[in-house]
Length: 273
Length: 360
Image (tube, rainbow over all chains, first blue to last red; front, top):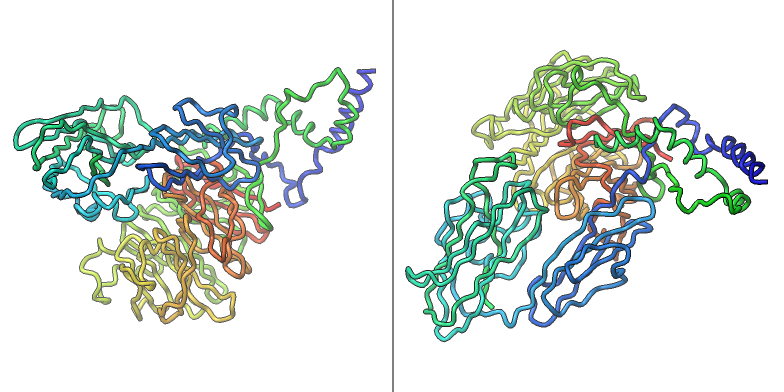
């Protein structure tokens, strides 16, 4: 019985095997198969990466049959994760990961976005950029650092990003009298493909006294492009004139084609919580 | 790209593909008939030919078209492609071993020529009194060169000093030319000062327009240019690539209109019958390897995006476009043949040869 069925199956299959292509395609062409291809990364739109109450997140990839899944706890995304059905409301600092799945294509790469809940964004400070941005990526100086307009991963677009290729970048900060700040945030770009690295070290001074610093390791391999928030906790006792010193890595690491040259440093926002 | 080809080859060589393709072609009825306990299809992955594009313009993909032995026929960037009046497909690459590679439609090599075009970028075909001519825009030479179809140089347009806009040749980095019905030559200085230079057929400068700026008549990366004769009155279509716009001017250089294609970094408009085909080098926020192909209908609406997301208009505005799958890296030009099949040349794509799309 089973053997008979197999026989029928083979005959049927052979008779149909050439029916798929139109006559203009009768040449012997090996067409690419859908399952060899990977979905592109879904679009992630967020009303504010920094928020006081909550942030709303939209995900999108207009491909028929696509399903988007996400996690909010830093875990890798699988088809067992939560499925996206509409805008997400996020009310705590979290690491959002998103991935697209499709019955025919390979799943997309994971998209990662960190969002920060802050107690309050402080106004009442003046900042003075002491180091001039490179003339090709000038941004809008102090203005673009404080407008809360986030740059996108495309650093060439718009005026949000200021780019530097320097030993150090100095920013003087005048706080209004009585302004109470707890944490300084600096938003920077990591785009190794474009020779842009987040900095090696941040130092915060009051006059010449070091108040706080933070140091970051040199990456050991190329990381996905990302907008990062670096921060420094500001000690409670401080004056009103501060200086932030940003120190990029002295040279691009050995695994990168730009080895030995000075990396680029890009920033788009500076603010206090 | 290499991996994908390797993978496909592996499947074919091991008979996996053929057997699986048979399974795909079974009708539903047949599957029902043989779903006896002895068979389980749950674990057999059904392979399907990739189909890209939307609506009326869908395609199957041949990744192997025109692939040559790179020791003898190397390419760097595959910048532009045209089809001549004999039906041959010409590819322009910035590899000076063979700047022009001539194929038949099946991808068989016919001939190669050209060793003097280190910045070979724009390739335009013009049929003048029944004879084919080529215009090569060279980024490195800061020149546009007119040649016969087999590569004999006839005329060189250097940097347009006479325009008063340029101080030195290095400021002029032409990306593309378009030839009007009367033989006038329009050159887009897409990597230079963003002017459009208008010459007569003898190469005498008649007009300069465009340039950098914030006005609608200005450009950021005036990368590609063509003559649009679909309405009966010829006009110029010029891409403003970084602005994600296609701009129309009359032949006297007066601005007419702008078409927004948000998210689509369009390289060069190519008109075939009533449609406009545009290689789209980046998409979304402009990240690397996010290209696809854009196809506009006679009303200049985006109707199909092979390799891209489904085009959707909301209150008359196109929703920002993105790449859908990683088929393309950086499409730089599309050539459309008389069978409505497409040849896609790519910049910065691992020195791979063009990809052919067969209309289905």
